[in-house]
Image (cartoon, rainbow, N blue to C red; front, side, top):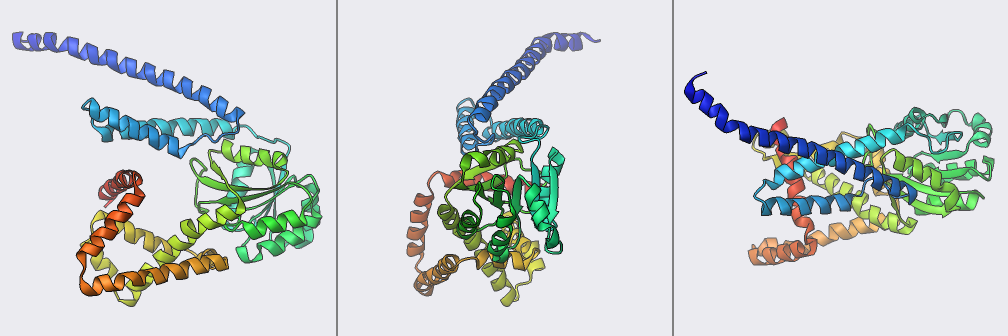
Length: 380
């Protein structure tokens, strides 16, 4: 080793030693953080609170980004680090939860279990260790025996036949068994279940598709029907799988789904229809596209790559949904005059009013969409 190299090694060693000490401290702090999280999980379990709290996590991320900026640390680096920490924490909690059954002796009957969503829940319950039976449209001669043995009956059939199936099944069930459904409309099915079944009733709506691999952070809406205490173990099992259970009345659920599902899907359908009727060269536009256009067009293409019957059921499910969509279409006509006159100031005024209405969510949406855009850049 030359004299200069020896001098360099001697000078840099204290700094490297300090970094090693800092790294060891970071790992120690992560361990301490994990132990505190475990304590929080136990409190959440005792109070039947979901593991994942999206609003809380976003508040934490926003606060940490602010602290990072104050200390001249890259906020994006801090956000990426903490999203990884939080994701690993949820995975660990969910993995442990899946090894334990909330109601070990419960027998599950999934009506429509041969369908895509039905098969998904068959897999979740079976992998957890439950005894699961399937009742489909071709084996109704087994309905009475299967219903008598079931502690939980889950109706997972198309919206247009859900009420009819409920009315046929409920009289065959034991009074102590839980009856629930997985329909995206809740008011009519919940009323039908409460009317036809004397025992516990719970309305559920999974807000995800059948291609989901696990329930980590997946949202399931829950609408109370009858005998909430007897239904609680079903909700506890969903939470144990990592799902976020959002409780709502059937009316509130249906009103929100008019926006979250019906309006969103119809607007996407309308955009796709416009592109088709205008004969837009999709492949050519992609050659000129920014990542955000590719992302938006990807959501349109995604819709048309799926089952039209499913989306028709969602969009046309209720008169209220259809009325909202008519109002949406009519609302677009208010911009005709602005476009006809080329009134930029009217556009800017409307833009600013909407931006103010969105409030802090605008900055959150900007951060999240930027993350997706960067991932698309890496991919394409």
